[in-house]
Image: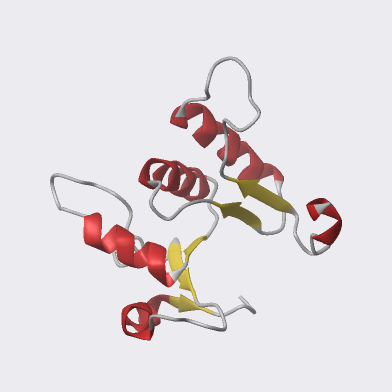
Length: 130
């Protein structure tokens, strides 16, 4: 049902929920990283990943795959805020927008409910056209 409503412009869509309906062993983050990397290399257009902003291990795996593939990694303002809040130099080494230019940028949707948090990343904003 949902697949009938997917816009034709989307070339690849990665969805969180890697163990839903899966029997047997659960894939490791390393396996998911390798698969994401292959998808990024094999897909000419945008590759979208839909996941929880609090799943930091998965976000890091996707970021590493995207960076290794030479692609641009986009986060929304909320994810940028979560990453900045958790980053601790020398203790918690996770990607942040300010430390990963130009390979990580912030995508702003048309409507942003928490503008005070969201607009702190305005200098890293990327437009839909890019």
